[in-house]
Image 1 (tube, rainbow, N blue to C red):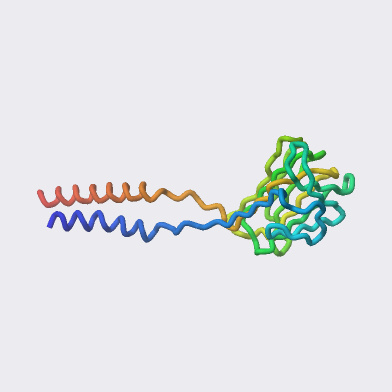
Image 2: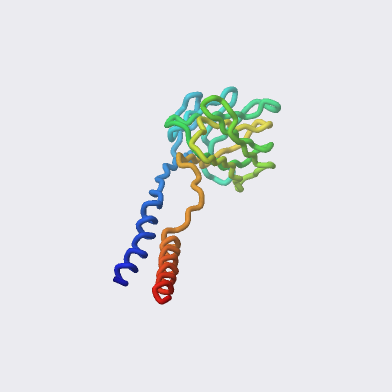
Length: 200
């Protein structure tokens, strides 16, 4: 009888743990590093599921000062700046990051939803110069980013490693082992109380 009680007390928390544990999310992460991209890019060019739209800017894949292929965004002098719009063709995404260097002015990335509402922005905070890249990123709790606009108030900068993912940032979830140990501990406490009651 005692083994049956212990078995059910230990089994129940483990079954609850298995039912409450979320299935692991499979993130789809896409990276465009421009190593195999064509030289000039034009409005409507599609690479890695992103449509590149430039407005008045010129886009060229060239070797940056550190020798890596990168996307040079060259626009009208201030106040126009080099502007690039990236539309995500596979549907809205949850996060975007891009490496920036050789900017004459701080570079800004702005994320928008399908209704053109600004969801968030990030900027370099200063001038980045090669071979050092500064990373800009925006991550949301839901996959709402339909497109991003990257711009500066100068006229020239380089982008590399444009990365986007479709899985929202997950909240910290306790590890299953820790929850299992907690369940076993609670089962032990329940068993101890039961023994004390039966002795009284």
